[in-house]
Amino acid sequence: MARDIRGILLCGGQASRFGSDKLLAGPGPVVADAARHLKDAVDHVLAVIPLGKAKLREALERAGCEVLETDRTAQGMAGSLVAGIEAMESAGGWVIALGDMPSVRVQTIRAVAQALREGAAIALPVAADGRRGHPVGFGGGLREELLALQGDVGARSVLARHAGAIRTIATDDAGIFVDIDTPQDLAALHKGHTT
Image 1 (cartoon, helix red, strand yellow):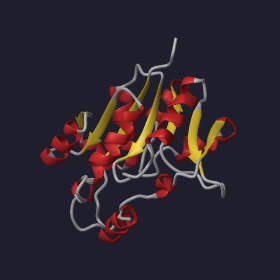
Image 2: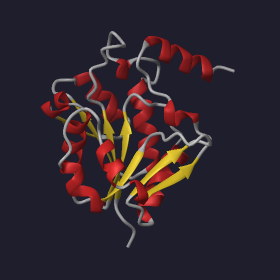
Image 3: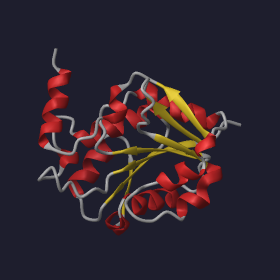
């Protein structure tokens, strides 16, 4: 039976460098583009957001996501990740994507999900120069380790402990590195989209 791979979109950042809610910036907006790409690659997507973000919830629901509002986003990326894993604990694996990364290609995300379905413990895209990007996929066997995470470094410790089990997916998708942290990032993204 195929493993049930689900998407978790982390949308809990403070956007301190952007100056306003970066996830709702741009024509997409940013978060809706990220959500749609994830939703096109896996069947079920849960977006994890801070409490009381009605506009963010609305944008994500329009993009087809289930939304979890939680105060645990204040605990950093790990807090959001743990909340998402708990809410989708029965899944066979998770593709963890970031709400401020709107340019990852759908086929890249699909490849990460497919690697998990084929039994990979961890899967992630890698550029020709060896740099790792997002999203990162985790198989269900790592559930307990993921649930034990704390702080704002996400799942780096899990990746370090299981370095030998990581399945890398070669890609020329520059979107695996493009995150929107400043208005300049957003302007550069849209400039790159114009021909």
